[in-house]
Image (cartoon, rainbow, N blue to C red; front, side, top):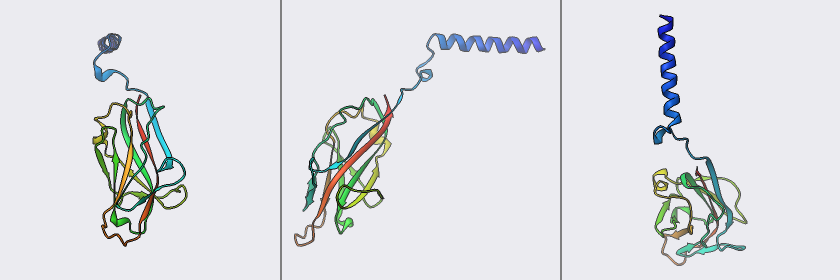
Length: 169
């Protein structure tokens, strides 16, 4: 009985070694190496300030130039906003293909320090929207809109923004 079990164990081990030696299936291949890329918090105008949010403020485009990520799996965008009525604002991440991804400021986590003024809002991006990207190449930007069309209301500022991504190389 003992020899029979030993024989089964040897056959199973030999079979698994054979399959691993010939490559096995795609599912058996090791996943790519984990990778992180970031666009650090930077002024929305690219130099030393932000943009006034009269009706729409769009930050200067930025690129992940030194990022070797091929498959993004998770990402978040942080916006530094100085505005008295956050409920009047809507925001979008402008993707490299020029489509927009809505950023829900009302459910964003708050905290951290901004560059010169304002509050930091961080929004996690839905993983389903990242699956179509093969890397992070291209121009990324953010757009903030004041939905209160009354010209006499106080304006605010999109001070700066950042983006972080995690995925596989």
